Amino acid sequence: MSDEGQTITRQEQETIDEENFIENTVEEESDEKIIFKYSITSYGADYTLDSLVKRIQDGSIYVPSFQRAYVWKIKDASRFIESLLLGLPVPGIFLSKEQDKKLLVIDGLQRLRTLQYFYEGIFTPTKKEFALKDVHSKFEGVTYKSLPSEDRRSLDDSILHATIVKQDEPSGDNSSIYHIFERLNTGGQTLTSQEIRACIYHGAFKDLLEELNANNSWRDIFGQSHPRMRDEELILRFLALYFNSENYHKPMKEFLNQFMGNQPLNLHSSLQIRQAFVPTIEVIHRSLGTQAFKPKKIINAAVFDAVMIGIARRLEKGKIDNSETLRDIYQKLLTDEEFRHVTVDTARTTEDAAVNSRIKIATKAFAAL
Image (tube, rainbow, N blue to C red):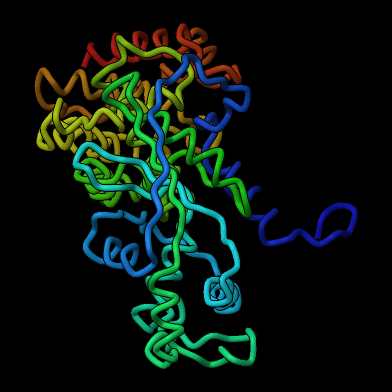
């Protein structure tokens, strides 16, 4: 109950818990603006439903598969299939053409997954047979296999329109797809930045982030995995600033998009990335324990990136054996007036000057180890 005696809803409690989990997250930049124009090629394509399902099954159309993606209930899915069987118009989908020529779904996931589940005969969320429910009596309880042959052919030959987009400029990062995805997927609970990146920037680097996020030392410091991928985003933030801080310019969200979208495994090997993160988080865990990065009882993202980079740069010169000295330097850093100004005592921690200043201060402090 709140102070006024009103019940706090589950969604409100999740928001409260999330805000109290990490201080100064990337999402503080609510006033972000896109800072340049894109050059995007787009064209329309009409697909028959059976060809769409085949493309999903063979992977030539890639449907993001992280856990929160499919939210339709059996009634919602049934009504969509019913609309197609009745010949009613349905909204089109948006696809992004990737470098490997595959098509990434940026809008229309619910519709495409529903088609796949119906054709395959299993409503995957419940693991039960996909039989239409609460629809026209002619189709009530019908599965794809039990459809009359004429209706099945009509469904197979039905058309779903797709708009296919490809970013021409700037080349290399596909960041426009992030913004298209963000703006099209506004229904229900808004996705966090990292959840959108998980959909768009799939592949080896995304898999490596998941691996690093499971590191035992990191898990002990952060706690249980964050349901909105804030922990994974912090690791991305460290890696982006560690490898590319000299090119940092706000907004932080766009900086992270570009780093993840630039296929960093082409620029840095998975070994380099592991060597940057794993020894650093392990020495911090050994020296500072679960209170690392928490000047106010919760993780401060600005303290996290500065301390991680400072210690990672020191580790480039050799092992750190003196945990007590590291702990003393860390405590002094948290009381340093200039460092606190760009990490704890300001809400504008992603300003260029603040980012550069705190990394410089932390790097100098830990260099003395």
